[in-house]
Image (cartoon, rainbow, N blue to C red; front, side, top):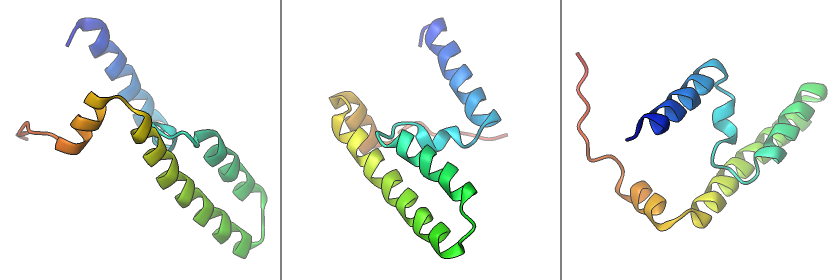
Length: 91
């Protein structure tokens, strides 16, 4: 991995650490809709409506991620299918 790629990965990782909600939007074609629904949920006081909004958010998370994966390139899909083949050791 070249140095600029490493820096980008590090910045993205740091951003996700600082703002964990960013992970909800990554690789999701419905990210804007999820953000709007989350804002709406904060404004609504009716608990039943909040539950419905939670269900919609879950559906959009699944659907948007699946849509993003379907439109990703072949190598990305292959990497997702295979997963990690590197054994990670913790000391």
